[in-house]
Amino acid sequence: MTDPIDFINQHPEFAGIFILMLSAFLIGYFSSLWLHKSKYKQTINRLKKEVNSLRSPKKAHDIETIFTEIKPKIIEVVKETQEEITPSPAPPEKIVEKARTSYVTYTKSAPELNYDNFGYATAEDSDDLTQINGIGPYIEQKLNEINIYTYDQISRLTDRDIMTITELIDFFPGRIERDNWVGQAKALKVH
Image (cartoon, rainbow, N blue to C red; front, side, top):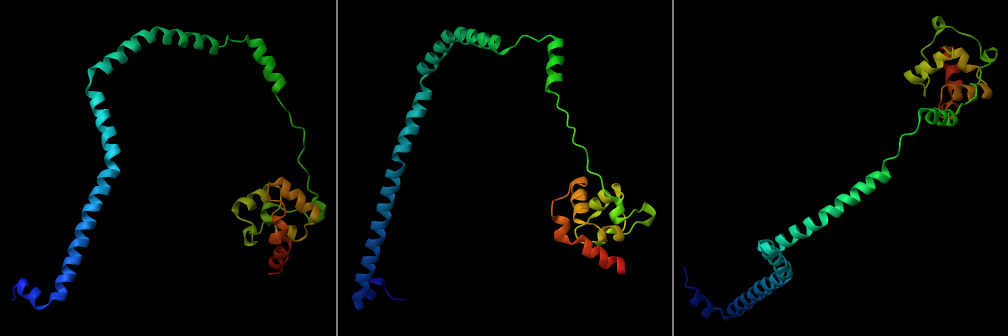
């Protein structure tokens, strides 16, 4: 192994590179140290002041004195506020009268289906309506509640019937037409 001094004497171009690299390292190290210290100097000073203020018993004593002087005033204000907020109870007659006047009745009646248009069916005649795309078990149950059980009934629905069914089963308007229940029912009826 060769001595580093001998290596530098034999190759002077490496000595210049070594000195440049060492100086760049030292400049970077000390400048980052200085920047880091100056960046947090304000925070450190603020925290030191807070710690020193907490150690001082004089300020704590002042706060206790101030609180004992203000405490009776605070209690008085709270009592006044509670008296303003707390309403006197209304007599039962007024409560009943108010409830009667605010009661709302709805007189809208449910639309009725014209079974003469698409036919009658019973639960014994029922088809598996879930085979129609767009009808799941829940919608099938809703259709059965309004006495629609078969593909034949669905295949003969008119636009007026579809509007009525949509309202009765509380379904999305236009969905029956988009899913083409009538066309699908006709295809399933043939099979």
